[in-house]
Structures are given as C-alpha cells and as structure tokens.
Length: 390
Ligand SMILES: O=P(O)(O)OC[C@H]1O[C@](O)(CO)[C@@H](O)[C@@H]1O
Image 1: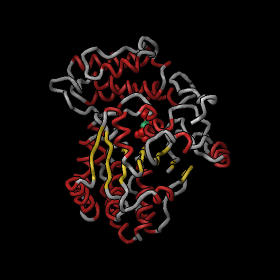
Image 2 (image 1 turned 90 degrees about the vertical axis):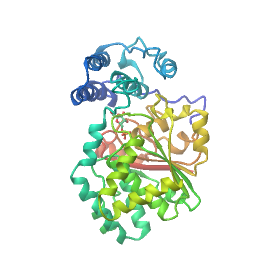
Image 3 (image 1 turned 180 degrees about the horizontal axis):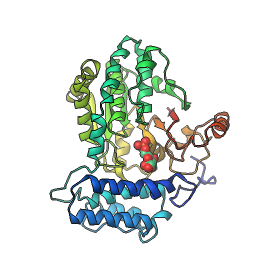
C-alpha cells in the first residue's frame, strides 16, 4: 500500500460519464430489474417494490432498508454517508452491492412467506447449465486425458480464468490437443508462481465467482489439484445469497456437480470424485456474510481473516473479487499488485477477465501497446490476467 504520505487515488464513483459504472446504472441495471420482474409471477407487492427500486436507482435518492431486516445494522453502517443522496454520487463498489441487497428485499428473498429463498436469478443460471452447446464443451474434457498432467493443469487453469468470461467455457479441446495454452490476451501471467505455491501439503482456498460455465471450469481445475497431489485440501468460498446475478451459492455448486455427472466420461468422473471429496472433507464448502457486503477486502472481519490465514494460497476469481482485493480505485495500471495486496492474509492470486476500470500490475510496455491497440482493454472482457504474490 502507499505510505501514509502517499494517499491512495480516489474511489471510483458512479457519476463519471466516462467511467464504466455510468453504463451499469444507465443501461444494465434498469434492464436487469425489468427482466427479473418479467421472468417471475410476482404479486402486486413485489412488482411495486421492483418498480420503486427502478425509479429510485434511475433518478432518486438512496433510501435505507427498513429497520426490521436481519442485516439492518450492516447497511446502516455503510449507508450513513450515502442515504438521502443520489445513487449516482455513491461509490460504485458499495452501491452496486446495495442494489443487489435491495433487489432481494423487493422480491422478499429473506421475508418469511412463499418467495423466501427463491433465487431471482435461477432461471438465468439454469438456462446456462441447460445450454445444448455445453454438452460438446464438457465432452472435450476427455481429450485432456492424453496430455501430460502439467500441460493439462495449465489448460485447466486457463479455462478457469477464461470461464470468467463465460463465453469460452470449456473450449479448450483444441488448445489441449495442440498443447498450445490459450495465453493470447493475457495482460499479466504469474501462473508459474501459482504452480510454485501448490504442493501435496497445500491448503488452498478458492473464492469463486460465477455459477454455470465458470464454476464448472473452476471445479475441473480443483479436481486436477486434488487428483495430482497439488493440494491437500481445498475450500470453496461461496456467496451466502444470490448476488450480482450469477454469483455461485451452495445450490449452484450442487447444480454444477449434477450437470457434470450427466455427461459420460471424464466430466462424470470429475463429478463423482468431487462429490466424494466433499464427503471426505478434502473439498470444504464455506460462506460468510462478508461476501455480499459493500466493502473491499481491506475490511475483512476477524473470523474471515482467521479462516484465510490457514490457507497456503487464496485464489480470487473474477472481476468483482479483483476490485475488492486491490481496492476499487483509480489506480495507475502500472501499480504493483504485490504492494497493493500486501495487507491480505497469506499468499493470494487473482484469475480475472477485465470487465471494469480497475487494473494494476501492468508493465509500462504492455500498457502502451494496450492503449494503442485496444482502447477498451480494461472493460470489454476480452483480456485476462493471472496475478499472484507469495
Ligand atoms: O462476475 P465478475 O467477473 O465478478 O464481474 C462482475 C462485474 O460486472 C459488473 O457487475 C458490471 O455490471 C461489475 O461491477 C463487476 O465487476
């Protein structure tokens, strides 16, 4: 981190017309509310609550949650600086988390009654697992068997990374057969360091991101680590509730294991091995309310720090985890990843495709190339990175 005399750059806010957040609030989020409303037979109360939320985020002032919700204190604490003020003036990171909490409130996700526990994003997650092209992609896993374990491992690591883009999924058959790992479009690649941190005694944590194709790719990678003695045990950190549309909860983990089991061959073998690994305690599931909280990981609560401290390596998946890890700030892209993450308990790695303004750990030469050749490199999802520090 910068020294105290060297203040960090400002947090990213919603109100910069040239910033990535602007499009999220003016386009993506309103469409999402409308889509959730159309996709469910909600009654008048939920419909009205969704309409109110849409109006509030579009032009209104941020209002607090009612006092009777279980997490009122948490959100009052965060919102003290923002409630009663325009959504557009709030920080991007915290306000988007609050939007998802408000969405769950609008659809009565936590309210005792018929809609309690009904995931408003389930139809989208299920559609991805039912996509007919997934069968072909999962079948390509059989081809990986022909590869040397090290090559197969690198192909699976890269599939886990690009799974965050969710459009490539398991299209690693060709890559695997030609033994050409998919390294183009990587703006940073510390994968060697990641492999160095893995060993038969390693306790690995994977803070997962999206359900569906991304989680399937993560599970294939995790199975590889367990099968090849590259980890003694692995803990999956899942979301405690539906979040950011497709973030993975325990239900989504179970759905992925079941989907893998439906494809004969390697995919179903992976499903069986992981199912058994959960039973044997080699693959642990874990969640914490902090994973849907509005703060960066600089504010980790003590029990989560204690959990992460035992880990030989924590792998952070995806864009949002990256923003929370380095801080959602206007960092110069050449800032040092190891310095910015030195506060984090234990060794940490990030596998992320770039889908928002934040980027660090880019070499000056790479930065010049990117700015000249691909002006939207930070946000269009076509670039990826693997960054790590011991
Ligand atoms: O699933 P990921 O990789 O965390 O990406 C989520 C990203 O999408 C956004 O929600 C954009 O809407 C970003 O705020 C966030 O960083």
